Length: 475
Length: 113
Image (cartoon, rainbow over all chains, first blue to last red; front, side, top):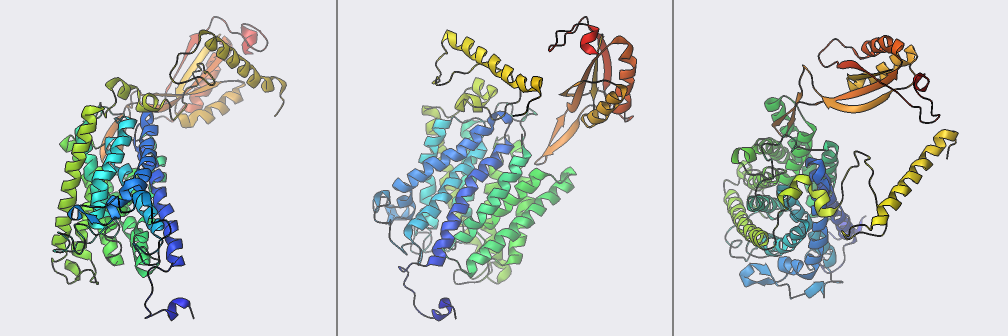
């Protein structure tokens, strides 16, 4: 007989380590962290060849900044004890995570607090990285890092506190004591939040040069997009199933629903494309999968498998139709963050009003005997999160843009943000030669003799390459 | 001496190479090119938005030959590259005043033979 069977009916001390849950959550956290490099590939393939490194660096930059901010004050703001009437948590309760390094069960039974903190850090990281897709190809890297730090502090952490940290939407919060909205893994906190933030930042920064005119503004590497979507899907199992914070049946339900909704969304997007455009595209398959992942995120632990399939299929179709909105509205959300994350997240959040299965937390959605009782909380939560994110993101973005300047110069945008912001290019297309100066950089002009020496070195190298051809020797 | 340049379908490069080898031509230069002729370009669709691409991928084949081989080489390229449809490409020649084989320093006809 298993030990777990012996424990049935017995009270379990939440401060006693649960090795199974801990092992699963360590793995889940790593999976969620992998989503951000995956997103870098997804976004990287969608931009032009001259911008791929910059957009990938926006994701990697988020990994750097947000993790550090999270440890220093972000986690306290999101999950510390209520302060300011539940608006945020108290970052001074455990400054720099002090006092939490060896505690167990503070946030989930049997789970070390550091595991929970790390898991939540990966959520904050990818939420910031998601925003970058809306403003791709035109943001200066330094101001982006500052935006990441301010945004996770002033937008992400408060919303995470409301939804998950026991703040406004908690059982005793101002909103939560009146209504009970559901969000299993972050449809509001992560996806609607990032989606609307991306839209507002895109408005603040303006359109890319050539938007709606230049036919070359299109994806440069669809295999990157497919690779990124695959990595996102893989990591999302940690995101959704990990949000149960335990290795149990609900985690299994969330895992399977994540599979089903994503598969259905992929098909939904492809069906729209086939009917509307005549072709089912690889970009459509990748985009549909992401739309399904987004939509099932708030719902994955609260719906049954059939509900997940319907949620996914609708998400794929609706998001496929929503991508055209940016052209109609003239808003340059570069990589359709709004269409995929805001629309997908909104649909997923609202879908619980229809598809939630009755449980201890809900009477169920409209199709499961609960009437409209779950529907209104979902709408109200979505509205509050959207409003806060939109207003605060606009303030942060506008302040940085008007003080430091957040957008690259027109000349730099034309010549390519990779080379002007990072002094790198992604691909060597033409071996055009040039010179190089070992050990010298920092933008200093090379001494006069260096060019001649390098040219001489280049000639030597060419001779060395030619030599084996002449002799027929193999190395 | 003549430089024969052919703009052909990329998928026909191997057939053209085989045809040229059959004719006894021992060297050729192939490079990627893009362009359009009577057939114009094609349409691509990304997330529901159509992009018309005028420039199609092409291959440029260049062969340096002595004058008496010119007609035969052009016929070999034509035979290898033809499908009978729009987009098969063009072949043209220009006169070359001199050539040097870099390895040996030979000039003129002997640099090509």
